[in-house]
Length: 81
Image (cartoon, rainbow, N blue to C red; front, side, top):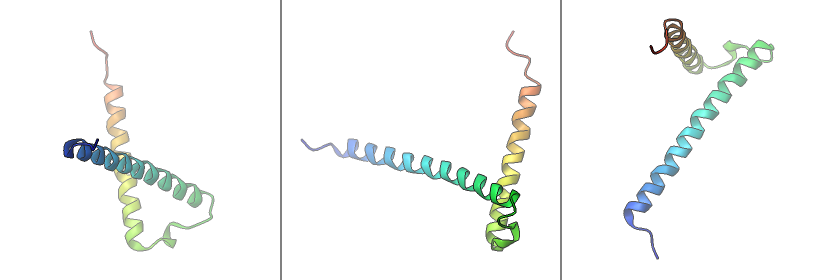
């Protein structure tokens, strides 16, 4: 028995989401690896092409901004009364 087009499309969409989630996780691992290598002096930030440097800086800034926002929410959280 052949799956319906709808079921097939749904399965394909789930596969694409799983791949996208995996890509996002791997991107985070890659960022952490780059930071470790820079901190240990194995590579220099300037070893990367300018476009890669810009992307890395943008991600760091975005993560820092998000982290500050989350801390602000936690600091002001008085709980539910």
